[in-house]
Length: 200
Image (cartoon, rainbow, N blue to C red; front, side, top):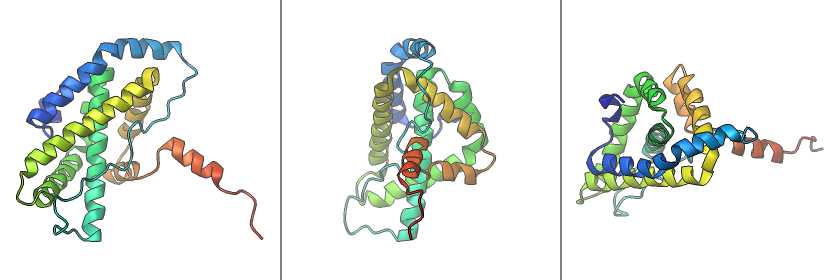
């Protein structure tokens, strides 16, 4: 894996992500093998929560405008996708796909990272924004890993679909829509719940 791909991850956060991935790495071969034995398990894509939770400021006196909130949420969603793809890369042996994603979208991902950095600096008040951010990145990766373990044999299948989707994007607009839209399964549920007969 290229070192530039890991640049946005720092110190303890990177170490924790590596350790977290090791939890799944031991079962990765089993997962991939099991996946080949279970063709009926349909991949669904979006193996992570689309809207990533933004931690609140440490004080209610620290304010952000609604426009800032929208930009911050979008940045967190992009970083959430990057983190999920990193977990997938380490767990399912998808390093080449992750590197291809970063090669295509690194400027956009880094711009989102800078927005997240700025958010933590302001939201932390007098506390260390970097410390809070590292804890957040670590927790995010841990949660994504736990969610992956819960998927069992379909985790790597789902991530394969996820990588196919993001690597097909031709613009950052498509990427931003992807991290904002409902996941395919949820979108299907919404569509099926929508009345098809016209209301008089």
